[in-house]
Image (cartoon, rainbow, N blue to C red; front, top):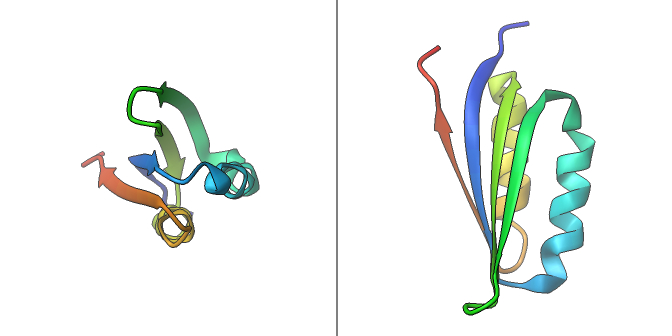
Length: 81
């Protein structure tokens, strides 16, 4: 199956959604290359960056599921590779 390399940028403004974000990422962990999470305490948000190599449908599904959570934004950038 054809895969794509991408980065999913996630901003969590509602701390009650953190557990749901983690559950979604765990569900699709086989394609995740790496993850970086930064708590920005001064603003009360968390910034998460996910590097992923997976089928495009899976990447879209992950970003869509996460982006529909309350107080969470997700955007994806794809590599040309």
